[in-house]
Image (tube, rainbow, N blue to C red; front, top):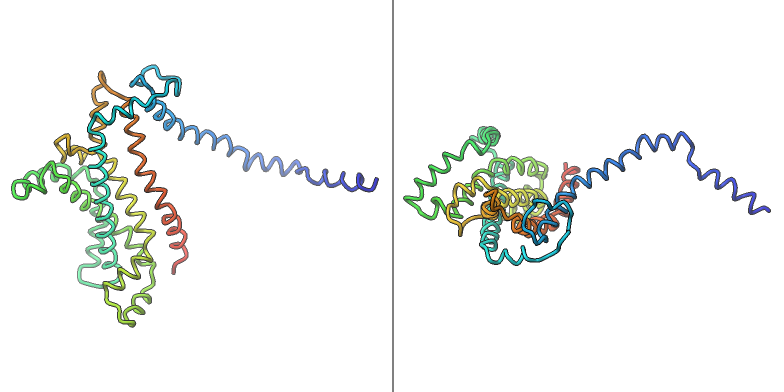
Length: 300
């Protein structure tokens, strides 16, 4: 009798008050349907592309039923095209651009952050102004520049992967320098002075101390510098003229550019495989990106 008498008040106390329940419905409950809608909105295109990649029809017309047929014919057919050559070209161009952007941007940001020299303020202002102009304004000048430069140095002319890498490096230098400059300023100067007192040179201070402290922003710049050239179409289409030097964006567009003979199944299979390097790089750098944002918020 004593046990029954004590358990009843506990069940009554566990029930939420009507006011709390109404507040939960107003503050929290409506977020679940919105979250489900957003997840569906984001996941449906991915599911549709996967369905088209494994479909045997090779077309999107009438494919209203997802995963109606499953086949590896599209993936196998990629081997009969230039897909893997375009993949290698894209990885070379995007990887070289990412490495070069990190090295050049970090060196420039370190110089602007740590040294005081004539033209420093003017240089920062010029970088800020130049990066405001869209790159589309420079397409014609880049084409004419490479056309003339190719007559003197063919390796830097049109249809050269090295020329495309140089164009990407020049276009991203201003933005990356400004992005890194703010993060370099969060590193206390006392660290440099302490290293100098211990006998370290500027190069030793930069490579052994500063670069390790700014690893998070280096990871962010590397990721952005890799993703940009990986999916770029216009510059790659203008500079790379031969099919052997095309990147994935240019080559795969050719598969679906003709509306009457578009092979969407081959395109979808290539798109799924092309997304894997970016996905792997993002997962690899994610811990550095998150750690950098957290650490950067508390550095004095």
